[in-house]
Length: 245
Image (cartoon, rainbow, N blue to C red):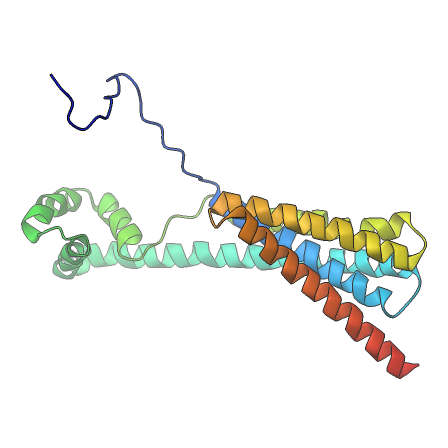
């Protein structure tokens, strides 16, 4: 029998494997920590280099900033994830009450959800009846499709805090490395600019590839933002230092 589509059928025992990226939360935390970790200490080091000639002071100030920044960023990630978890619990309790106390309203909401996908009420009715027999799954359905909320993973807040803080530290040490190895401040600044912009480019490319926005565009944007921040900090420090002198 001929195959008019020209598409070769797959063997029945050959499983279809989806290749979706499923580590979005961790990647988001790494992106947040690394982007700020690379950019902020880089800008600070560049600004200090425009005002002072001591690599040692740049290193000390940079390490202090990395310590403070990683704690602040990690705490911010912890509180944000904790807030998401508390919001999910609060909304779930509300939905659990509503499927008992406001059954008709919840039924209408089910139909409205399916109408968004052009599914008629007659086709949605069997699904509704099945959900009504399992209130827990009904609530799960409403949480996801009505409110757009997914249950946060256990220990998400602590994991987010540690990931963001660790990424910030890793990123922040890169622009400071030349100042730790080279005593001449101007040379250290040039080396810091080269390796940090290179790191920003690599980081931006990887980020763009992972989230699907295009590696080249993401790399260029990341380099331009980091370079602009450092340039402004350096020029401002030079100007202010000149006026102070």
